[in-house]
Length: 548
Ligand SMILES: [Mg+2]
Image 1: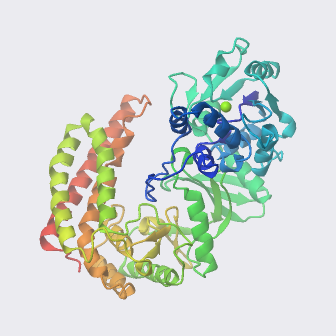
Image 2: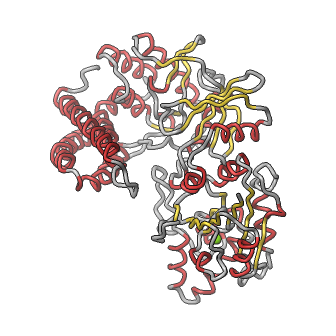
Image 3: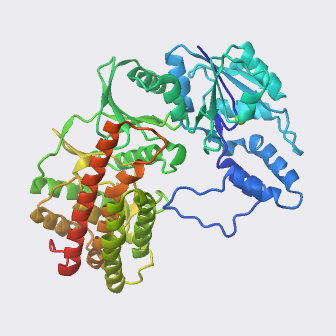
């Protein structure tokens, strides 16, 4: 099998590069643009920038000049699309030959520096290690043409079984070979075409059905240059796929393949890698050691933990979890705030919790039109509790509701912390899952530990936990008051998180009756859980936090 792939906007991801280059070259400025570290990055898209520039005087010229810069001198602002590197390795594993076939002029429009675009593109691919041969392609497998017609001729000449391109015009060329299967890489879902795929993950699925254990073995061998003996998939690790990898040497590792980052800027792999390395370097060994990771493959290799899940939680277990928080708190005291960004979904003020609830509510409310029971719950019960809990929180909040917690009171937090992310090993507890790691209010971690629906703690254990947390954060004078005033708000977040299952139900995918029933059962169950949580929050609102 032979596969041909276009280069610009198919392999090379310029989504953020247009904005960054427009700023760097002074074509645009970012005055008035709101940034929000808690949300997905909201850089203006290539199309938005294009439309904006074309409305300006001399806009055609500016747009063409910007393109020349993005594809040339400023190509370092681009990246490889998530999933490309995986696809190339999957081709290599299966003996599929890949060529890159690009329509690219030699120089950019209006570029006085005369940067050679083709050379820049090749250098960019080299810097990203794609032409080393490890991925099955070399410089001689990359072709550039002055016209689209010539490019399509090459697709024909190479007898490509598939050709992948982001421009439907390419497939409409008269000379496009009939035997070649078209795959339109349509990241913005702009084209209603059967051959459209919106991510490389979808292209992977379309061409190869699924990622095999042999593919994972190839990732590891390429990464650490050692032979893999076996790979076994381990189920049930959140949204990531986790594999147990045994090397020929007998050494065992955990391989983690993270959720598709194409539409998600949280960069879980980078966060987890950095957190594990940092904590290890400061002597916190109760977390898995990071061995190697590759951003383009979206894959990381960690120490394998031989341990078991904690099914029945004892008081001693709660104490040991608290000891880990103690070590994080001590480390936080000596860490500059510049060292890490905020944890995912961090809440440094009452207002940030309120905004998070409103955002989550708005997302789920969009799907509630299809479900009257959900709509009734959201609009009546939930909305009413939210109003009463919020107004009391605002009244009793220590200091200003919108004021952010000072850095010296913030904690380096794993964010998703609880017994669902702890293993018991012969050397004690091992804590894992640092995909959301960063600065946060320790009150959030304290509340989430109590509220997490995956954990069953007795009232006594909850009291124990709260006592430990108050002691650890005793220097933070408003800790207890923030805890009392934000517990209900975090609980409301959880009520909505439990309902996320409703947002999965109306994708483009056609699902079978059995799958549909299963999904509806799950939704009913989650709605019941959410209702129960709301009752608990109403009781807490009335009687106060009874574990205190
Ligand atoms: Mg293209």
